[in-house]
Length: 81
Image (cartoon, rainbow, N blue to C red; front, top):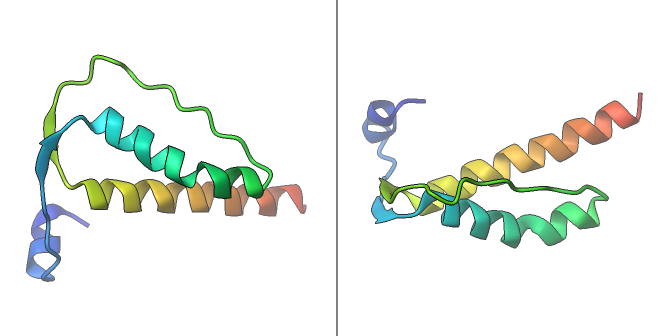
């Protein structure tokens, strides 16, 4: 879904200037206990020279959580085959 579609659907985008790599690191660290409890491992490799940019931290966290949940789910399903 594109940004303009989100705006039309009434989704509030709250951007702030920050370091996207740090936001990703924080989200992954917050999700790490659940990942490890599921028997998985996550290695996060980030460029340390990421410039500051405008982004919605809550949206980034939700996107990462969805990606990691899907990765865990489909990895588990492939192990069951």
